[in-house]
Length: 360
Ligand SMILES: Nc1nc2c(ncn2[C@@H]2O[C@H](COP(=O)(O)OP(=O)(O)OP(=O)(O)O)[C@@H](O)[C@H]2O)c(=O)[nH]1
Ligand SMILES: [Mg+2]
Image (cartoon, rainbow, N blue to C red; front, side, top):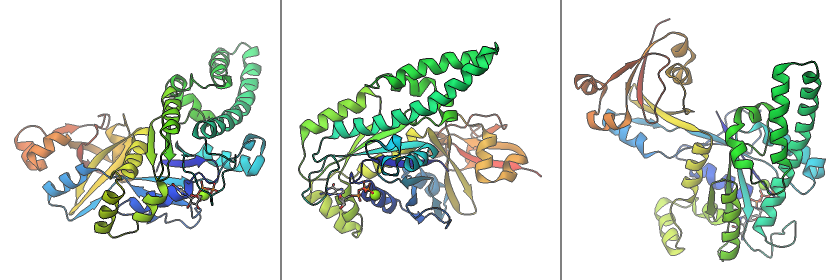
């Protein structure tokens, strides 16, 4: 399962957001392995298509796709030099697949701010700088090694040096404007090195009841310049009203003039940022949504359900989502001639309803 790490300064509201998110999923499970730290939660991804497919197929049970969220302790200035257990936390961030960067915009007399004042752009910049400095260290090592190998005329190593030098210039640049491009063009490379700056990221602005439009505009622009999706949330209120029975929750939302969807929006954005798409399976009265990386072949999708499905893959019967809405069943789709029979190399489309045939 892919994971999203919640990152930010201390007291920015990371744990509050984590709690709100973990509770917001329909079938929230505390992560079932005791060896995993307690601040890891698995959250269902809301997807209205699941109910539609399940309804048409007459399924009693629905199982949504999920994503793992990890609430990582706060980073402080100098974290890359080990300040405030920084190295340990940075190592944790290296393990996640995407970053949810929480920035504080709420004022509070009781909740201290490590820098004394509320200033979202300064805070976001501080975290970005820590990630960047930490990356540059990783980089130095990789570049030294590649240069050594390149000396002997190894062509691959020479190409590596060239690519690394290009990327190093982008990382060394204070303003980080080149990051969006680098994120796209170097993703495999970055993954190998575990570069933090190039991980897909989302910026969450945690606002209080009093809003500051100047702060909001500035930070939104900051995120936009970096190609980072941006979302506003009031984590404290989301956490509080998320505990209420549904009716009361709705009442409070209209009373506080709060939109419905900021948590759902964060979940959907996380899913997209991780590059995931969904396919559906129907079996014994159960309709399940499964997540796979966009572009995955049917063989990989089969393996998501069971390793036997992948090993003994024979064929995949596929009905595209919109076709399924029209037909309502594999049988009707077959009659109409829109049921596809595909091999293991078929590229799964978002929303496909798939039935795998396998033989061992
Ligand atoms: N007024 C207000 N308080 C908030 C808001 N969000 C979080 N808080 C409070 O801020 C304090 C810190 O929140 P946490 O969620 O623990 O912050 P954190 O980022 O996890 O902090 P560390 O774990 O220390 O890094 C708590 O007392 C929260 O109740 C908010 O939107 N408004
Ligand atoms: Mg915390």
